[in-house]
Length: 226
Image 1 (cartoon, rainbow, N blue to C red):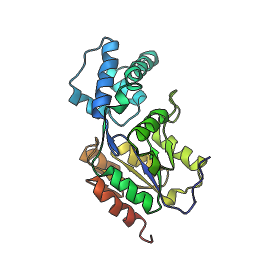
Image 2: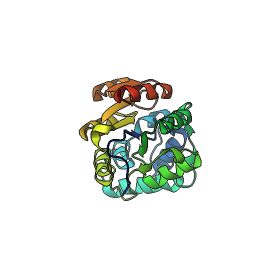
Image 3: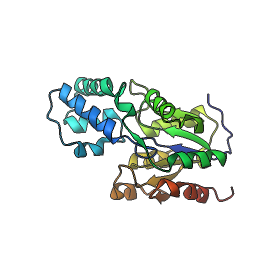
């Protein structure tokens, strides 16, 4: 069980679209899965909408099918490429390393809370030398457990001593914001990722940031007594 101070402010960072831009690797892996299934491949730009949600929620829409066998085959083919090549085909957004270093120095507890399987998220953080800033990394298991981010955040509160009133969920998709709100956290939406302005506004986050540089000020506003 991860131990953090119950009254220590904790920041939950989404990974894809919030800390890193994974469009190259993820679109190539989606195309790889479609090709392995003999499906026509759309333009890479058309695949950006599927970045963020779990694969098991994205592939039914992409394949226009709820067939469990087909969905699992697509996930398997996606990971066939992603696990060796695709996970490193991405860029950390400019300003993110400095932001994390600063927030870590401010004594916030930082967690990664992602729809990407935990095993891959950890490898990405290690590869890009960001792991040192995070107390822990939370994501789904490969079998789909905790694919739903609302359930994942609830699990975090069960496994740690941090409290919802002392936590902020930071992400680029409505699913990030709604998962945080459902679990009682404050929320910050970022607009530089993959969620549209309309999508994010509809989720009604507590604050909206247009760049990584703006996140620290938003966090300090969420905890004015610090």
